[in-house]
Amino acid sequence: MISSDERLKLRNQLCFPLYAASRLITREYQPYLEKMNITYPQYLVLLVLWEDDGLTVNEIAHKLILNTNTVTPLLKRMESEGIISRERTLSDERKVLIMLTEKGKEMKKSALLIPEQLSKDLLSGVMDLNELVHLKGVLEKIIGHLSGKQGESTCY
Image (tube, rainbow, N blue to C red; front, side, top):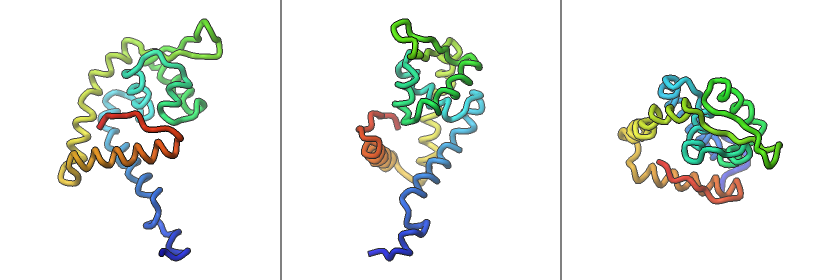
């Protein structure tokens, strides 16, 4: 059993390696996203919309496990950059539909190689594909539990 003082050491925390790995993986995306002139959060929005265009702000926020007040400014920036359009629905003025513009749709071509290239970088002698898939599954279990729903993603 770990003593009380030991429990508070950084090396014994689950949160820190998850946080550090997330930051470092996000950093690996930067060169690819800079070429596309987008940020990592904008990339996540694009992934959601490339899969299912024409979602509401709430639906996007839900899929990204973010609050709408975090997503809304991000969407406004993407709109000003011509990547998406925002339109109020006719049935409910409170709902805003987010749709890809032609520019947003075209950006998908530039992004197609990112997952493959990053997988190669991550697999370069550190993890094999099976370990990476297993890790992703474990993380989805944690996310599903903490968010109160099962993870739906199947990308690698």
